[in-house]
Length: 114
Length: 112
Image: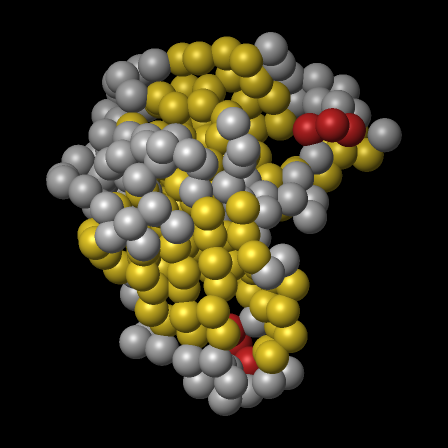
C-alpha cells in the first residue's frame, strides 16, 4: 500500500503571497489531519477532515484553511504569508476517528517564507 | 484545554547507556501513542497504550501507561546510534472526536 504523499516537498514564497499544499492519504483512509512543525513548538495541530467535513480545528488564524475532496485527498491553504509561517507542514491520515487511530504521516512540505 | 508536557527536551547519551522520556497530561487520557521522527524525516508510529498501568515492549523499548492514565514513559535500554531522533508522545482525550495532542518531543542524541 502506498503511503501518504504530499506535494510539493519544498516551497519558497515571499511575504503576502498565498500557498496551497496537497496531501493524498493512504488508500481507504478517510481522515486527514494537518500539523505545523517548527523547532521551538513541536507538532501543532491545524485541522482534521473526515468525509469532506472539518471536524476539528486548532488554534491558528483564519489565514489557514483547508478542505477535503470526495476521494479523501486534502489541501491546505495559507493566505497572506508571514515570515513566521516558515515551517514543515505535515499531513497525516488515519482510518477513522482521530483519537484512537494511528496517524500515518507524509514526508511533509517544507515552506520557507522570505 | 488538554495539554501534554514531555521531558526532557533534549538528551545526550553515550552509546550503550539507557534513555527515558516522560510524558504528562493535564487531563485523563483515553490512550497514548508514541512516535519517532528521525532527523530530516517524518513522525512514524511506534505504539499505542490504552489500558491503565499497561506496559508494552518492543525489543529494547519499554512503554508504560500510568495507573491514572495521565502519564507515560518510553525507556530505551542500551541505546544505539540507530535510536537517534525525536520521540513524541500524543494523548487522546476522553471526549468525542477531539484530536490527539502531541508533546513537544524529546530529541535523543547518541554518541558512539
